[in-house]
Length: 328
Image (cartoon, rainbow, N blue to C red):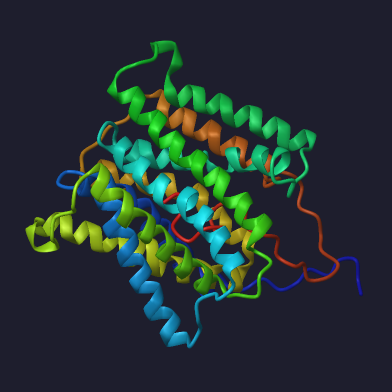
C-alpha cells in the first residue's frame, strides 16, 4: 500500500447538516435554560428536562428494538455518571443562568475538555500528559481567568453565576473520564446507556427536587414559552441530539464529530444576542477564544496532520460525544 494513501473522507453533505444542527441544538440549550428558570426552580427545570429526554430515548430504543442494560454493575456506574454528567451540571447551569447571560454559560461549557484532561491523567489514568497537552491546559486556563475578568475583582452575583457554570463544566470533567474508564467498553449501545443514564438521573432528581425546591408545578401551570423551552431542552437537547451525535460519529469519526464543541459557544452567543438581546464584555469573547485555542492545542488539532497509511480507527471523543446532553 502506498505511503501516500489517504482514506476516503465522506462527502460534506453526508454529515455537515447534522453537525451544524447539533451545534445549533446544543448552543440553543442555554437560551432554553434561561427562559425555563424564569418560572421554574433550577432543580425543577432539570427534572422536567431529564424526564423528557429519557422518554425520548426510550421511544428510540423501542424503534431500534434495543434494550436497557441488565447488569447491576453497569447500573451502579451509571448512578455516578447520572449524578455528575446530568443532574448536577444541568442544575448548576440553571442556577448560573439566574445570574449570568445565556451566552456566557455557553462559553463556560467550552471549558469542559480542559477539566477532562487532568482528571483523566491524574485520577482515572485513561490519558497521558504530554508537553503539548500541558501547554494547551495552561493556555486554556489563562483564558478562563480572562473570561472571569479577575482583574475586576471577585464577588457578586454575576461572578458567582460564572463559577456555577464553571462548576457545571467541572462535573462533566468528572463524568466523561469516569464513563470512559468504567462503562465505555461495555457491549451496550450508546442509546441504551444514555437512556439508562437519564432514567437514573430522573430518579435522583425525583427524590431531591421536592425536598429542596418543592413539588414542581404541573405543566399546564407553565406559560407556553416556558413549556416549549422545557420540551425543547428534553426532547431535542437531551434526547434526539444524542442520536444525531451518534450518527455524526459513525459517518465522519469521533474526532471530527467532537469538534462540534468549538461551535456550541458560537451558536450560544449568536442566539443569546439575537433572541434575548444579551451583550458581553470585551474580555469574555477574547477569553473564550483563548480557551478554545487551548482546547485545540491540548487535543492536537493545530499540529501537522499525518498522512494515514491505513484507515484509522476513530478515537474516543474527548468531550462532545462522551455524554449525550452534556455540556448542553
